[in-house]
Length: 258
Image (tube, rainbow, N blue to C red):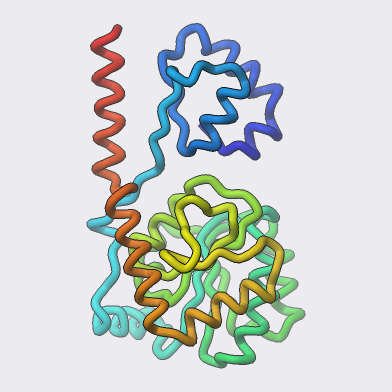
């Protein structure tokens, strides 16, 4: 089922949909506790809800050794660059204008920093126009939609997700699986725990966002600590094999009770 904000925006359609399938559905699978709570509010029995999160193939999404990272960075044209990475839709709720505002502060401190934005969406033209007006045009690159952002996760220094609302986004899990220190907002709890496996900042606060990014860029030990813990969390809780096993057990139990 889709995230809570989408459910709210389409509540009438959602309730009609639920009304049609409620009598036949044995189980509702949701990604988060928050989604479960929403369905319970809509009078769907808790015993018919299962929480199974998104998963990541941690055998593929993994950090490279230092020399391999340098080699790949060089091959991709980013030699000696500090890379801040965003992967996701280019929409208002992602807080991208605040990220661009924060990036202006960062460029004053580190001239070798670039911002890579992977994704497409209705805000693309507005974002490009904004970048053109801020004097950082040469340091911001819009990469469009990619079949897989793996290469960029493996060469980036920091992953940023400044969203107003989020579910358990696969992009964040992939970044964490690749050992990236992540800067996010409260929307990414409970995946990210502040100063344990990432840094949490308030939404719509470019100053706090730039401060958190600079803190990581200034402290390689902190970056390593956050990235190591981030990967550990994903391997232990969101590995695709674990998620697949949970679905297998669910299907088996449904067949046994059919």
